[in-house]
Amino acid sequence: MMEGHHMQLSKHFHLREFTRSQTAARRGIDNRPTPVAIDALAVLCESLLEPVRRNFGRPVVVNSGYRAAALNRAIGGARTSQHVLGEAADIEIPGLANAELAQWIAAHLAFDQLILEAHVPGDPASGWVHVSHAANGRQRGHLLTATPKGRGQKGMMYQAGLPG
Image (cartoon, rainbow, N blue to C red):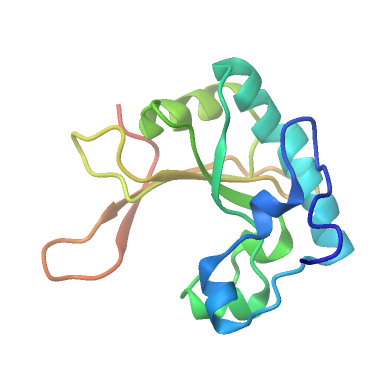
């Protein structure tokens, strides 16, 4: 078990939620964050994830949080991914439409990037919400929706804004 694995980042979030990875475990990738990334994760929790939890009154599930560079490469993450810096998380709230979650964050919180990912039009519960908070304090407020490409094509198509 990695040192600091049980570190509390904020009232409701622990470091282990942001570092667990089946791919890292399978491939023997060390997914321990740097102290700078741990600090960024704590800010992400306080600035975005705790307010989301307070508003909806339900646990927020972190599907993907911190990714060491080797893990990010292994899963095909973007080279410039904020996950590598500890500035981003892919989240969901069970029982809540991801489109609704994304729209609430967009309307109420300061963020760097908010992407409704793997969104299938007509299915508001599809996909997950990627949200980031830039450690430099300059939040760009980028809003995107990523929908799966057509049949037989891999990847996502990105469009500005959120549906509805």
